[in-house]
Length: 505
Image 1 (cartoon, helix red, strand yellow):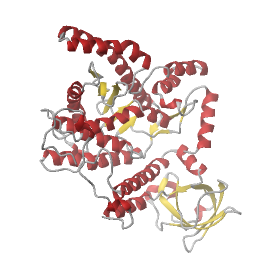
Image 2: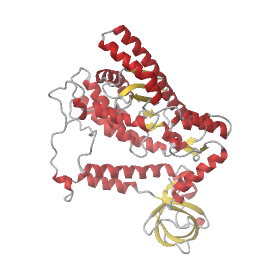
Image 3: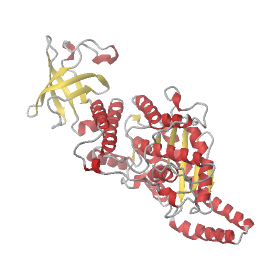
C-alpha cells in the first residue's frame, strides 16, 4: 500500500468526521452464518495456553469454556478436548463430519474469524502444545488433531489472499479508511467505535477512545486480573489443597463469570465486524470468487489430504510447528507466498478502482491514450499522462484494468516524451472483453484512453518455487552440512507422563 496515498485517505476520513469506504467493493469474503466460526481466546499473564475460550458460529451463538487455573495443564487439556471436536467438525475433519474435506470444490468455504492478531497467534500456541504431544491420556488423538489443525490454520493465515482465517481488524481496515493512526487501528473496539459511535466526528472519536481503553487481546486488563481474578485464583488453589470441593466449585463459578463476560464481549465484537461488512451496500470484489476457490484448494492440500490419510491409518507428513528444517523448504515457502501475493493483487485489482489507483501511484501501470495503431501488424503507439515516472521497462507485460485477458508487451518507452510502443498479445476478437474485444489492428482503438496495469505474473514465482522444492541440496548452503539430531517437542516436558512409543520428530 502506498504510504502517501494512505495518508491522503486518512486525512479525507478526518475531514469527513467518520470512516470512509475504501474503494467501491468489499475485498474480503464474509461467509454465511453457518460457515462463519468466531473464536476468542483469553490466557493468563505469562502463559501461552488458553485460560478461557468463546467459540461458535453466528447462527448458533457463543459457547464459553474456562478453567479456574490457567496454569493447570490438566484442566486446560480437558477444556481443549471439549473444544476440539467442535472446531474439527466445522472444518469437516473426516472423523467428526459426514461431509469430509474432500468436497472442498463444491461445498461452501468454512471460515474462522478472530478479534485480532494476538488471537491468531494463539493458534500457534495450541499447535505447539498439542500437535505432536505424546501425553498419556485417552483423548490425546483428539488433542493431536486439534494441534495439527491449529498449525495448518496458522500457516494458512500467513498466505496472502487466503479467505479461511480472518482477523476482524484486518477485515475492517480492508473495507474502510479510519481517521486514526495505524497502531490504534489494531484495536477492534476502536474501529467499531469509529463506525458506530455517533453522528459527528467528536462523538465517534470519543466512542473510539473509550472503546480502546478496554482490552480485546488475549490478555486481560492488568488491573482486572490483579484485583478481581488473582484473589479468586489464589482462593481456588487453597480450596483445592484443603480438598474443599464445594468451596472450590463456588470460586470456579465466580472465575468463570468474570472470564465469560470478557470472552463474550470479544466474540460479539467480531460478530459486529462481520455483520458490518456483510450489510455494506458495496458488492464483493469479483476477484473473490477466485480467491475463495484457491483458499479451499490450498487448505485441502495443506490439511484436508493429511487428515484423510491419518484417518486411513497412513502416515501423513504434518508441517512442523517450529521450523522448516532446511533452506530448501524455507525458500519454497517464501516463493509460494510471493506468488500468492501476486495472485491476490491480480485477482482483486481488476475489480477495484482503488487498488488500480494504488498500482498507478506505485508506478506499476499508466493512464495512456492510443495515438497510432498499425493496421498491418499488431503495434500501438501510446502517450501516457500518469504517473510521471512509471517503473516500466522494455519487455514488461501490461493488461487493461478490469479486462486482464487483453494484454500488451512493452517494446519501447520514451520517458522524456512520455511515449510507449506496445505490442498487443492477442490477434482475434475477444467475445468476453466487452468494448475492448476488438482485433488489435482496428482503427477504433485510436483516441481511446486506457488504464494499463502490470500483468502480475504470479506463475513465474510458482514455477520458481517448484524448482526450489525439487532441489535436494543446494550445493552451497551450509545447512546441507548440518546433521539433524533427535527432535524433541517442547510440550513433552510439562504435560506429565508421555507415551514411550510416541513420535517426537
